[in-house]
Image 1 (cartoon, rainbow, N blue to C red):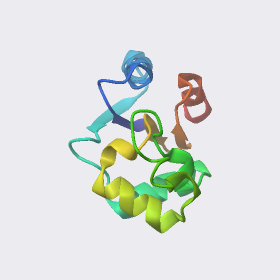
Image 2 (cartoon, rainbow, N blue to C red):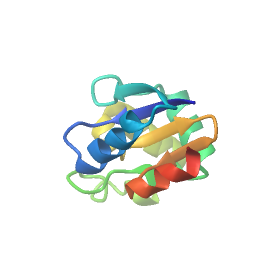
Image 3 (cartoon, helix red, strand yellow):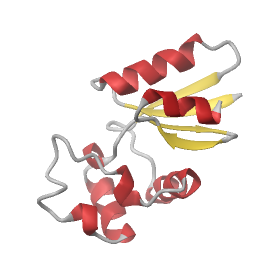
Image 4 (cartoon, rainbow, N blue to C red):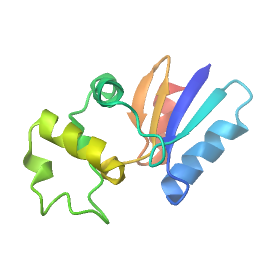
Length: 114
């Protein structure tokens, strides 16, 4: 199975999710450090759509100014634009497999798509 993880090595949850994926023999893994190589706006919209969530549900609130900027209540386009301008606003880790996409918080959500 192919899996792509949008990863931030400074995040414990992201590191733990990556470790689970790396330990599996049945996973062909692609790791994207999204702060350095953010997904395109279209890709990010597709990830949230496939995860069954609105972009605002994928906002990173802790350690950002997202709440002060009103992003949790903003429309999808505004949130996606903000995430493209500042990838730190993208919560992590997002994992995509042929079975779907999950924001793996907590890391156990990963099991739903493996």
